[in-house]
Image (tube, rainbow, N blue to C red):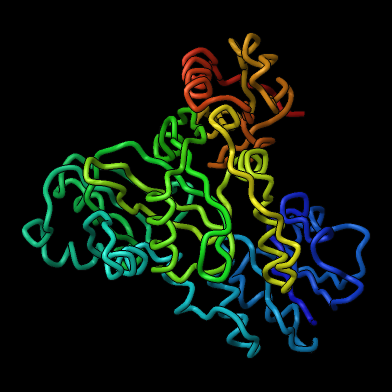
Length: 402
């Protein structure tokens, strides 16, 4: 089989070298120049660079012009799902087209699909329609969220006390690329796992501590701890995934636990960010990216069975960001008594002379402090993270560059 990989996810995460038989298949990797170092090493494959500065689909098509048409196009990054659909269509390669991908990328299409399946989602409107109709055309009052249609990591998301305030903010963005939705009260959870042939191969719920929005806008810590996943919640997640067309592959589904039951928030047809994948593998024995690659190349017999963690077998993750510091360097204090705690499975911390990213990221090695904790009960993990978030301090350390 001829396989084209639109490379963005490092091989240390995707594990292409481990899960694709490069002797049996003819594999071509197309990578932006700044990601070449993260390609798989020591495998028989064709490696082609693209600039990484323009339209992804166009660059990939230019890079493979004249090569045999692939039988399979692999794109594991959320940002490459739509470009990959365009590449498949241009090359005539089987696989998801744009219409298939939109329900997991466009938040209006996504929620419409979930509602059509009889599942609750926040009320919403495309921003253009809301601006045209005005406040009186919006069927809710009070707190309102303004969102990009296809964003991730809460970039560009803002929360407003009223519909009018959200519409005012919406006049300064591209209306065609945004929506507004009602704010639904309740704790936010994420459900992660793997779909196989339209059913759940594995699923595990986690409760957020902090919010992705506060992490992005205010630079506050974020984490989550795994919790019990009752059958009715797992069934609800399966129904949401079927509604948006995720029948095979990993997923990261966010929901609000309202007083009337779970409310769909959004879903990605990919593993969760930060250290969610590691925490999931520790608890269940399933590495989600490996499972995804095995499914894509038709090696589903190699999928490992999933364990169900016991009440004291839960894990969690935490990330403390640096993008709001106003400095590429930081001072970290108060972490000593947490760093060597037996609950800590992995601790990653920037040294004073190591820069942090000034853009939003969950990557361990681009932020001041990150880690994975467990195994323990959900309550013990949550108590640990609550104290950690209240104690650790990250301050800017202005440093002269050489």
